[in-house]
Image 1 (cartoon, rainbow, N blue to C red):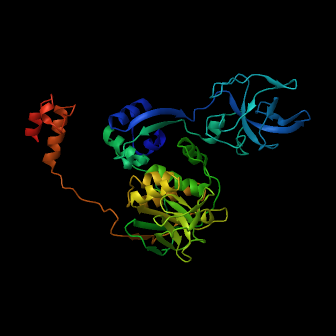
Image 2: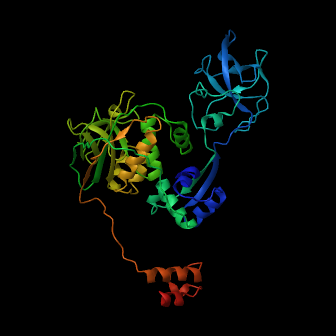
Length: 448
C-alpha cells in the first residue's frame, strides 16, 4: 500500500521530515518497506517551443526538431516521438544534464548531425511509469523554466507500507493519517471539502436482491458535469500511487478511494438512472472496463441497470465497459456500497481480476463513509468542472448485514491506569503468559 506524504500532511499537521514520519509509521506497526522521493525537479531540463520539424530521408524513425528555450538560440534535437507538432512546448534536457536514470545528455550525432539535447517524456523525467510520447505542456507556459515548476508538480515522498490484514482501515490515507495524528499529538483534519450549495433533492431507485452480500448501497446525483483532463496535481498523485490518469471524473473517483479507503464508481446517469443488486445467472456475460468479456458464475454479485436488469458492473471488482463515462457525460450517479468481503474475494479470484477496489472490499471498508466520499469527489471534480453540483436527497439503502457502529463504554479511571502503566513499562510485558515476563508482570496484573 502506497501513501504520499503530501496527502498525509493535508489531513494532519505531521512533521515534514520523511525520516521522522517513517520512524513513526514503523513504531505504529505500519512497516515502511520502501521510501521514494518523487517529483524532484531535474536540473538542466527547461521548457522549449518547437519552431519547426523536418524529416531526414535516411532516418525514417526519427524527426529533426528545431527548438527555442526562450534565450533566442535555436537548438537542433533528434527525436523519436511522434505526438508533437510545430508550436508545441515540450521539456528539453540541455547538454550536460543528468537524467533520473543516470544518463548524461551529451552531443550525439545521427548521420553526422549532432543533437543538442533531448526532448523528454514523463517517464524520462520520472513523473510517471508510462507515457505515449513527449510531455506536451500548456501553450501559455513560459519558456526556459523547469517543467516541474510550470506544472506545479509537488516534490513528494512515497511510503510503501506492508500492512497486516487487521489494518484494513489503513488502505486509505485517512486511516494512516489518523494513527500518525495520535502518535504526534496533533488534530486530524481529514480531507479538504468544498461542496458549496446543493442542487434540488434528487434520489435514484435502488433494489437489493442479495441482502446478505450487499449491506449498503448509496447513490449521489451530480449535474452540470464537464468531462475533460484532470488537473496536473491529481494525475501526478495518481501516478505516484501507481494509477493511470483517465479523465477528471474517473480520476476523482480513484483518488477518493486512495485517500479515504472508500471505493466508489461513477455512472453516466443518462445511461443508468436506477440500480438493482443481484446474483448473476450462470453463463451470463459482462464486458468489464478492461475490454474482456467475462462469463459469470451464479455466486457473482452484479450491479445492474434497474430498468433493463442488465449488468453494469461486477460488484466490488470492476465496472462494465458499456456504461463508462464519456466526453458527452453531463450527469453522474456516484455509487458507494458495502459488500461482504468473502464474495468479493472469491469473484476476484475466479475471474483473475484483483482490482484496487476488490483489494479493499475483501479486507473491509467503512460502510458509513459514503457521504464524505461524495463530498470529496465533488471537491476534486470542481477543479476542472466548476459548475458540478451535488444534489441533496441522496439514496441510501441498508440491509441487516450492514455493520453498525458500536458504542464501547470506557471509564476515565481505566484509561488513566493504562497510560500510567505504559509510562512504567515502555516495553509492554507478554500478555499471553505473564510468568515468562521479566518486566514485572505480576505488578501489571495487580495494577490492572
